[in-house]
Length: 353
Ligand SMILES: Cc1cc2nc3c(=O)[nH]c(=O)nc-3n(C[C@H](O)[C@H](O)[C@H](O)COP(=O)(O)OP(=O)(O)OC[C@H]3O[C@@H](n4cnc5c(N)ncnc54)[C@H](O)[C@@H]3O)c2cc1C
Image 1 (cartoon, protein in one colour):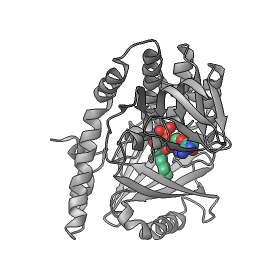
Image 2 (cartoon, rainbow, N blue to C red; image 1 turned 30 degrees about the vertical axis):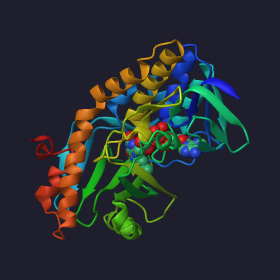
Image 3 (cartoon, rainbow, N blue to C red; image 1 turned 90 degrees about the horizontal axis):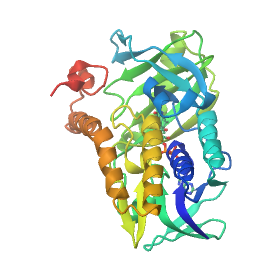
Image 4 (tube, rainbow, N blue to C red; image 1 turned 180 degrees about the vertical axis):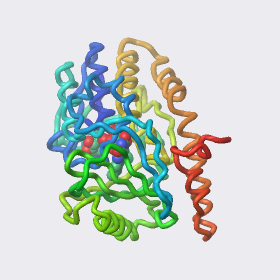
């Protein structure tokens, strides 16, 4: 099968890329191994207010507003940041709406099909036996991107996560963050979503064996304090790339490969937030793909420049903070509260030189 633009993955990055390239007149095929766009959900579903500038009305998928952030450092009383606006999404509805927009724009979207392999010449082999040849490949296939692997751009630093959906006993309008030396390489969270909440934690993969216990303990403590119910209504998890930005473009033969979202390492290495970056980079990738099809040979390099101008400084700072915290853990000494604060975006220490 031949197409101009082949998009791997129909998450926020892939759906945004497919929609943008199709809107600009390119012939687009996008595939995802999920049978239903957005399901299963592997996300805590918070987006900062600014994401609305990329997606009108957030595709009708907002479930509740968020006003602030409460950060709990070890057993201290929480530090409250009142001005941290955002929204809690229904991520399945959000992804499904973005995929529907891509189809409306003219992209051909196929669900329930896996990409098995990308050859060194850029030919993609799919699980249904089809082989796809495209002028541009957009790798929006998440943290372990096959497109990224094909051009030697691999997310090596990752965080492992585990998340429960639990009943929320009292309404809440903040994202709660739990920082502790007992959660190495990550943090715990409680994000409210109406009558339920997403309660989870992420850790460095070396500590994956402790993740279940960490989440159980957080759940038990929050149940005891009366904030959440003891029932577990859902369980999910997944990988978050935390090594910072990869080189988001390359060539396979004469085909342009563009990476977007998690595949490009755009997830914030400290907060793990990646939805907004996925949508934004996806749109830019779709634009670059259409530009390449129209004969613009600088489209790949321009895409990289644009991503660097938007994301590089913030991602580099976050990587530095991760490395500092990682050193504290590796030395065997538990990071103290000052080190934990310096490693979290809510504190001025994080933003200091
Ligand atoms: C537990 C958890 C909580 C998170 N919480 C938040 C949060 O609150 N806020 C936030 O902003 N970010 C959060 N993130 C990160 C966020 O989910 C990602 O950054 C975001 O989904 C990236 O979008 P994407 O389109 O790049 O990748 P994805 O959403 O991962 O989409 C990639 C798509 O590619 C498909 N795919 C992959 N490989 C193949 C293949 N071989 N064949 C076919 N299809 C394939 C997948 O099925 C998937 O649909 C969280 C992540 C996790 C794991």
